[in-house]
Length: 399
Image (cartoon, rainbow, N blue to C red; front, top):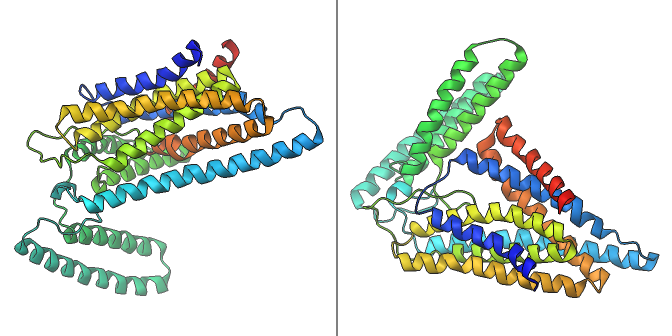
């Protein structure tokens, strides 16, 4: 592989290493991460539209066009099956690992975790508390039957929300969830202040449109705050878990399912960079630039999860080095594969269509979804998507 190609493929790997090292120094605010997610999504969309889509329509004979269309459909189909299958597989692996090693502390216990390490007295209290809640749930359901007959929307809505609260409370009682972890507690305090400010804005009525916008902002903040109240700290690509306290007891078992998922993720990203660069150098550079942002935050969140699993520095460093190395190797493999397939237009189109599906999957199923959880109605964060789109267009013009 040529030197400049090696440099392009190596940049995301370096970004991931820097992100992994940064976990020992700081954690970035959610709003900044969401902004980078939006920017990265816009950059990727630009790379797909400017560079990859035109490669799917070669000027060939009718027979070749037919074969190219078949290759395109096959590539898209394989891409869909692979990306959704990969997501399902990694989620299943993490669930199985959680079942095999149920090491959550009580304050961090998952909603699906059984009563572990709980003495008989607490079990008895949990049973009695749960039975008391089921009595209240039954009363509310009977009350709902009467209200439904009247058809009053406000009354029905009030009871349904009350039932949701009862279900949440019964869940906490049943699974002995006695508190909120430090990270979510800190975030709840910050969002609580935002909710207070949003409630003040609600009191001013300038116009119906402004009132609708203010109410929407308040609702988004309320839902986000409630999410932290029920949230369990699982791994997210762009979400770095809080550093464990000194007295916290860690399992000292590496999360192998997570390591496998991140490594496969890095391999796929490297492969896509290599294929994109083989198809068009500017597309490869745009893909590498967007992946630099993505892999930097992935390294941050991945290393943070390792920090919450073990205190052995050598384990963290060794495992954190694996995905960046795999990314470089898969990037080289992808570039060579793209060069080889360029001599066979149909096969090349199949690989490009696979790449497009993988990129759009990353944008629509991960980047934008996670960013919107934080962005809500923020115009600045949402505008970052369009700045990323503009950056991709400018990059294509000057590279």
